[in-house]
Length: 434
Image (cartoon, rainbow, N blue to C red):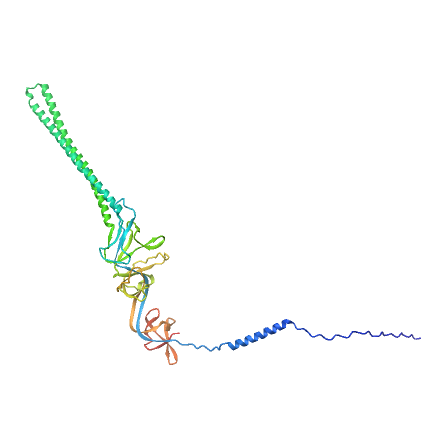
């Protein structure tokens, strides 16, 4: 018997809620920012492309120069300062008086930059103290001379007294001799007494004569001491009189007054009225402006090119338009060092005489001198920028038509910018510079 399977009972489908309609998708705000930036970048690129200047290709310009006849000089530039070749120093006198060694005060002084003639008063030192000392010495000399005269009178009286004493001793000696000649009628004792008296008188007389010689020498010595004392005072006064004369200083030559520099309150200045000077200190110069020079220095490597008598052109920094002629007249034999340089740097001192005269030319002006070492006239001259060197040979590019050809050249005298053509080029040739 077959079994019958039960029939499944299907439950009725449940009622579902209807599906909601799809919502629209919201876009992110950053997307709008990116879009805005892209649009701004595009606008900026378009604006730059519109405003960008048009670049045109650069063409290279060939610089040339023509060979021409001219004069060329080889010079050496020297720097220095002006000074006077002929001058006189005015210094404070070195006083001879041993007690007058202090400083001295200027009470008269010629103005700096003034012109003076020989013999004019240029400076005077206060001499009141030395004048007072001379007055005291005059009184001392008068007193010393009075002592000499007084001593002479005293010695004269003393000498006369000595002469009188000698005359008395002589008379006693003569009397004793007379008494001794009359001794025949005297006894032996009386004759011996007379002989003793004679000998005593003779000894006294001789002693007076000897004392007279010594006394004379003593008088002479005493008088000499007083005379030497008076002479010492006179010489002392004479030294101060010389000092007093030197306190008034006159110009030993005609020229320009130039004051020497000095330190005043830590700064450089010039001597003025009322300043103190010390014995032997220089405070002024009288310079002859018609004999000026330039004191310069040069490097040792160039010293072999200088010779005495070489011409020079001198310019002054204070007067740019002034050009003076000069020549080399002195060269140092040994190299020297300067205070402002290292000790191992040495230069050769050079002096150049200024041949021209100008009233504005004064000492201590900074100057430059171009010394002419060599010179050529009416020769073809080429710029050094057109000369090239290759393997020790010199050449230039000479224009020929629309091109340039390479040509060997030989040079003569040259300076810093140009050179004389010895061979290879001639006047009228056009050479390339770059």
